[in-house]
Image 1 (tube, rainbow, N blue to C red):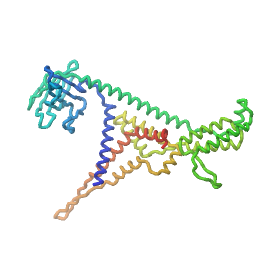
Image 2: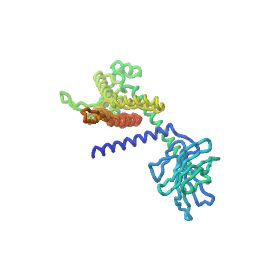
Image 3: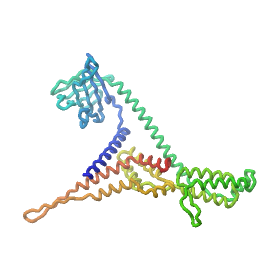
Image 4: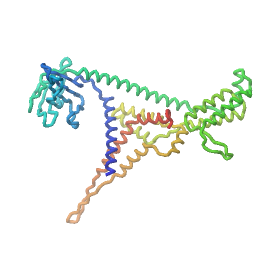
Length: 426
């Protein structure tokens, strides 16, 4: 029982992810401005009956509010308006598009409420100057009340939809700008390289001092000031142990320590020290900062391969989605470049990469699928075998669906890794 509940739980999550991805793909690649589509409203001449209609002739996605399992081209609600202003529903209809050519469409209609609206038939709608009316071709059951009533676009709904579209466009634009800025930032950090490019030498420092008309050797005041700054660098770091002489060993374990110690070290370098021992200490501190700030890939290699493979496959099916997946896979690889100090911190915390676990679990499920063999014995002594491979089919279909969902949301994993490895450092 517990296993069944767990499977249902993850199935529900999978369906949610698939629905989200499908909706996103539809919104990006299947948006339409068909004039038939949208919300419509109409009234009879007396003004005591109103028609509310939702219509989409491009995709059957209008849900029957009285039965969520029934989805069609449109749904119509006909209501009586009482003197008090309240509405009373008289009839409801589901509309199924049969044909559409120019400004004429033919629909099949059927009652929207089971055992309440008992009418089925076919009708024709003619669209003219932004409004249309229905005429009944044939009917069985109760007489439909929508015939010959002019129906126009619901301006309130249109305004709301336009506002919603503008907001969605702005949000999409902001997300795109943020995503591009994220990639640019990661590329900048990667190609910038280590913070301290080359070690200092006494000769270089003296040459710089002479070029700036300073004394060739640093003064005692500059020496003491640089010494204080270097002590501050060391004190900024975290104690990580002791050497054989019992002296503290320190290094940066947080990005704020890297930045604070670098600022102090830069100030010491700016004093252009000429003491050999001090320059040696500066180079050692620079090496510690460089080695702990250096980045290595700490993400999921199986996920990166999965994104590349799925992205390449998508390029032959849905090219735009394939290109986006490949770009997001590259962004994921960049976002998984993690500073050494953070890698070590995570190793001490323990735990593995969740994507490795999921992908390994999927392949484990596929490998664990069994073939059920049924043996039939006959009276004459011979046997026949029948193999049931349904477990293998289910495992493959379910596993591939999970892997595709993970790969299709690669942009999300890239953004999460970027926040972890470039912004928050946790």
